[in-house]
Length: 316
Length: 316
Image 1 (cartoon, rainbow over the protein chains, first blue to last red):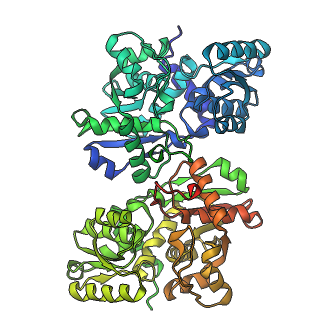
Image 2: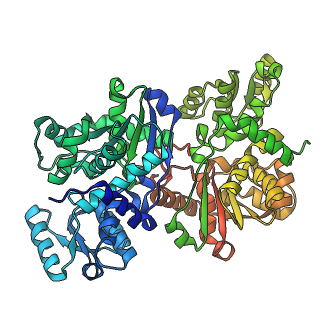
Image 3: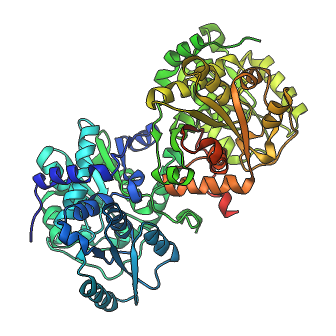
């Protein structure tokens, strides 16, 4: 297992800078009043391709040798990683192969194709996905880029908290949603190097709390197909993200589905930003845990803004 | 009729600076590609109280003498001006009286009260509104602040385009939605002084195109109760805004209801910002008029973000 270092983060940042936004940090005096904290929202929903994942994907794509790159990249995400990898590959002018279940929503397929991704459909099972993905890789020789369990991806995500530290002074804590742990691992990598006094928290849906239970148990626990409105957070930790999470995360806090939806609607209404349900989990847990966050300066990573505008969770 | 000057704008900016946000300017390579223009979105949806109106309202409130201020301020808007005036009055610690029809949506009444406004209800007719407003003013001695036909308000709104000029170099044009004409008049006041080469456009719903017809006719035309999804744009020009609009606006362009809703959804989906239907009219007319805007650097004022999240226009 290759562990990325902070030198890799610096190199990643140089490499991806032409292809990403330096996203703004927004504040809300209303939400500060409500939480008793001073919150700094790092708005990766405004990022290229609509999510922080473009940082890691771009680092992987632009770090390839020309010979490797010519064969393209491949992944089997149907979410923001697929969009981001398609975007980055398009910027480099190489193919991006995405294996997606045939049952994936048409909107997700259209979005991947909109960024130039080439979709190969599989049956909605792990065995079919793995078989089809192996075929695609064998046929193309494309480089596999995992959504989070990849040192290039984690070094890329780590550039987000590096920017946050440049944008905001005197942070006491940083909190991010945790699914597979790519963003949180990036925060661990950067903050443990540049600002080891900043406490790092993960925020997770109660109904997909495998990372919280992993941290308590001291080893990775993976759930099979958890159900939550925060659909970016259903995947489990893997060995590389566990390496960072187990060493550097102060705690992983959870929120109920209703608390997540309420925090999401509150953010849209007061901050006027479009963001995904996953991004609302940090605010939900900050509201629940004033004992931890009140009086603190807290960086909150808003991870992405790709949401179905026809079907908002408070309207269901 | 007292015409505000650019000195008034400078004084307004100093006066209101502690009470407003210097809002960010966002760009979208996707929307640039779609329009052929380079668009700079001045995001007043992130403004205090959720709209640019807080600039003019704050200028009026903080410009009052202590003796005048002690009696409070009053208005009869049920929209963003009422929120903004309530916010500004609250910051100064003086009362804000708002006359609203008893039929106004509960959410609007709650929002005004949330900012500390004191509501007096009237019947939903102009005669009742005027009678009740006269009673409130007689009883309190509060200072009337019109939503737009007021030199203090226009000088306040003019600070928005002053910031935009500081934030973006080399603009060819600025476009803003036009209802009563307060924001557009502010743009005229600032740009005719600081950047007279920048063309100023108004954007208006086809179904409430009184300002466009006024500009063609050479005198104010007012419609009675036009119907449009862009509910901030139903009010007519008045003599003070006509003064600016008739002298400095290059053209007023219109868009259909469907074009407005499509542009609104497009902005939410691609720029990840929550904004009102009114704010979508400029993008709708830019998309329709590539002959005017393609190849140009265009400032677009996103006027506000106070929208009913339970009832989005593309879902109706």
